[in-house]
Length: 397
Image (tube, rainbow, N blue to C red):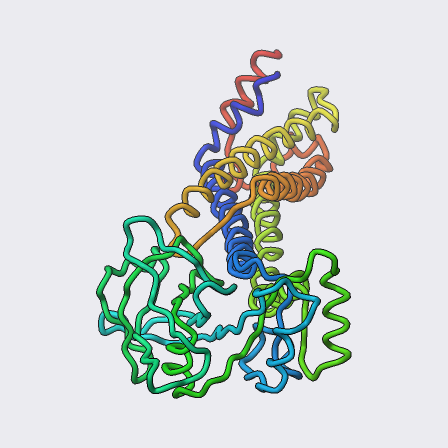
């Protein structure tokens, strides 16, 4: 009696296996989609946190430092260096702009980061044994006596070798060093170069920047500094928290709304899959369920029998999908970060959805009249005798 549900599963093992595989694929997709979004959020924050700046300043009306590309007016930049709100020497001009460089004769995507060496905005050193930092310009503005070498430090994950050439627009820069992994959203690599080189390759030698970043004085709260800057100057200043919120909202949450919707649909699909297969299977078991009830099996016992099958199939499918998602994440071409706690929550919710749909189908099945088992209303093509049930009835007799 206790193993009857297992015997019945072996009898219909092909359908059981297919159902478990279906749940496995759906769960792995749900977790992978969540992992992609989580990976995008992590990468969106990496660079901003790496700089150490807690104040990000952009042009008025730009919507934020990373939203669009608006150049700061020089008159608004000059007073910033003398403000007492900031730590001395931390006010740093910055160019951060998307580009489409040509690497090895192939167009690719990247972000150009132009900053002054020794200031905030980029790495101070390269990875040991991986080249050197670029030569920096001696003056902040353009001067004929200050020729700028077109050199760039690239992310190590780009797979470029020291000495290779990168074409950006009509200009060519030479790879002289590699920095530790710093990617932007969706594995977009960062190209670090002197701010004058960035101005030359992106702006045609126009001496302007689209951001200013700084670190506040230890005696000042970033929120108060931002409020003062926005009230007294024609700029847009944001704290690092506000900047991260802008980036995640603009680059992750907004474009990934469809993915969130898809995750919900996959959950529903997992539940419907189990429910439909369970329902069809229950219809095939109508005669067998009638026999069980005719020999004294209660509705509770029959329900438990059916739910055990659904629970086992769901557990196997969810656990397999959980493991498979981590394997797929490791092999994915982009950064995927599957959070363990979130994954466990997703697995539990998925299990509940699958079992809930199975329960609804099982309730329909147990409403069968026991007398139907002894009437000739079941088409032989729709329901053939179950050997496991025959054995059980024989043993009971």
